[in-house]
Image 1 (cartoon, rainbow over the protein chains, first blue to last red):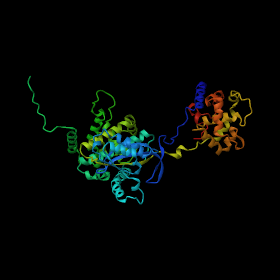
Image 2 (image 1 turned 120 degrees about the horizontal axis):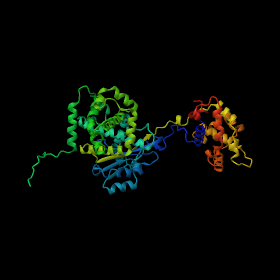
Image 3 (image 1 turned 60 degrees about the vertical axis):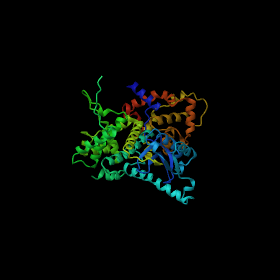
Image 4 (image 1 turned 30 degrees about the vertical axis):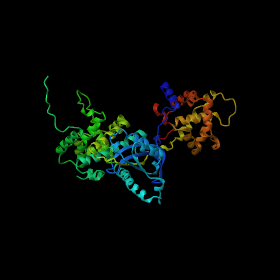
Length: 202
Length: 298
């Protein structure tokens, strides 16, 4: 008994049994969302979706401190082997993606980069016509984020660690694309992004 | 050699035809009592099954031979994971909801919903790459059905706020003052001080340092800085440890002490006998494993 107690106390001194309280997520980083004017701790989801049918083509999850422009090439490169890639003709995005490196990368692959330039950004853009035209297309992705936030709880997670957040995000987008496929099979393609109509109305 | 004339169908029978036929079969078999979610689960089943096979997961195709616990269908597990996201509920909640809906259980080919722990284990076992490959395969399937028009694409990013409970992470430990007082009056720290071989007079007494380290370790604090904050807020504890008049050393001083005299377990090793004796003598000593809670009131 005495020996056992001795061993136990030695172990306690070594700090092996230190209680692990649920601490902050070690992979999460501080980021800033310019649109919401929000500084937050977490991750950033980089998404590529089609304009016409709002299906999600690819995504990447990174800690929130990574800039959008750096993740564009990996996002496109992941898709290069996919049979969907050759169909891509135009890529729309905000001015964060408008870098020379990104433009060259797209040009080399025969894709037109239609990112918002500095002249097309802000409350009073210098080129209001083209800014409006691009914004109209780009606004579709905001609907994807908004609907997935409402229906799938996208935007916040209950898990910790980058790997778990990637799995969580994958399941959300699997659910999104599965909804599209399901709506096709039940002949209700117009309801493809409305879970309310698909799942709660017979 | 005779030539065999095989009667091939005129149209090539591919994955798309197979999936369409399977879904039509399912549609015909759907009972009238099925609600929209049960229908979704039943019709999505062949899609998930095919995508899982494309990902190299053939678990559902293997027939179990012999005794043993039956393998839980991976298709059902995937469907439940997706459903929990679609309903935006936790795994515990989805488990309850599925058990409350017999038609969902029927659509999932289950008699009882798998436990939330099983869902988490499945996620963990499959890992990040599996779900990414699954997503890619499903997207490819969408493309095969000509449901993706990717001439124009948009790229953007959105924030994902991390799960953090700052309130719990920064919670202060609750220390039992009486126990601390009793412990440090009974336990003599001189064996550890003698082992340090300090000849010069120090600003802070080495006894206090030893007491501080014992307090940190047995109080199960997360870090030295957490102990420092605690004793700054509780002057009586600081007094018991030997830091009089609120004169508490900085963290750097403790780090320097460790650097000079070795690691904390090394410094505290001469104290093991004394501490053991104390716990044996003490009447209200908790048994064995409860030593770590000795200082804590909860």
